[in-house]
Length: 498
Image 1: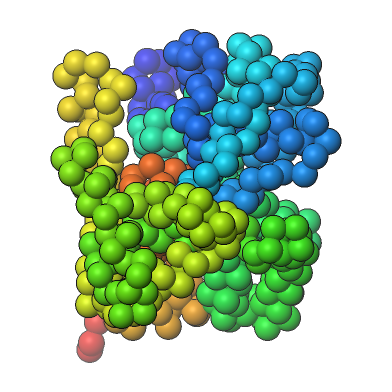
Image 2: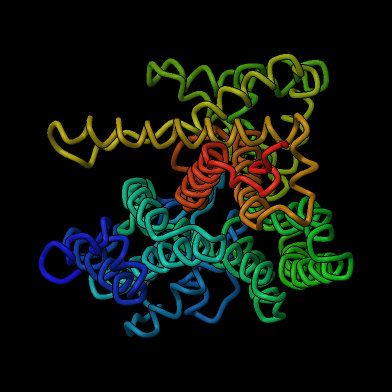
């Protein structure tokens, strides 16, 4: 049919989705450019926060590397600081002028930071670097969903959700969350590409390297490659064959041993602890603060000292800031008992594990409370006016749907659908969904078992939410479509009985 009526009849009812499907690269570049320019206009340069953890502690690593010395920081792995050192070289930062400006959690000593790292030129380059990380993570989310068979509408939904929750990992704050998220997303996308595209060796190697690098960026993920290797071995073997399952397990294990194991061995030789972070002992005090008394039978002389530190914090600030008594306890052990930072953390680890053993009925509710806190959206204080409430409600809806969808799928797998998950006939999206939920649950359990579980601590795995939501919705839509589909009658049904 010619004319306007015929054109209207043949028009695409969803022009935006049609444009995205016909020109995915052009549409993706346009979306990235809009996000990039809007974020760049919102911030002028990155912000360095606090003497420890967020900002200055990473700058202490950068200063040591610029000066040709090994990193003195044992609380966090050095990958983010090493990348900042490369940026500092490009900005022409000199490490000559320094001041004691960074401190580890619980450490009585401070580390020097080069004054040039506070320059506007360097911090602007850091901002642009983190903007690129955020844009790259968005692209990896889109590619992940495309590999899993999600259509253009689902990908646009995922990018919208990512834009909504991305401020929880601010691009203008100097911290390792965006780098860790990018590496986790890169490994996840590469693993899915290997799963669905003929098991290419390069994709599997990229997945193993990216996951191990994520551990070197944030110590919480130092066991994630092993966790995924064990969890995915049987489903991958059922789907692709035992040979491919063993190949995947061997590749992940090899790079984990070389990279994470090598860094752990270096820390053992230089700093006398094995692993990627030495802060476990004092950090675990955030879980034991309500029941420190339970360690009194084994530590009768020190328990009253630690209790006084906790109570002083509670009285001083009129709130539950006693969770951070481990900071004061570690410094006290270094000053009064002559311990090093590492040995003080080892002592506090034994103390806290003893309290947990004697308070085993109190510790699980503390972990559960942290899990609830972990799933709550962060309140958007940075947004002015009534938009603040609207933004919070929108994020609350996203987190509610995400938590409900994950709980529904996990319950389904536990109630017998796990056999379908192991079936080679199942679509790849089912296995992709299981792996995505596993990454999020791993991070939640590790953080909430050893720390407070604050919303900001889930920043490296926020990208999982826009991956999971379209997968759940698309699978649900597919099931409804299959149930409502009218069966095609067969020839036998038209046979008239004589």
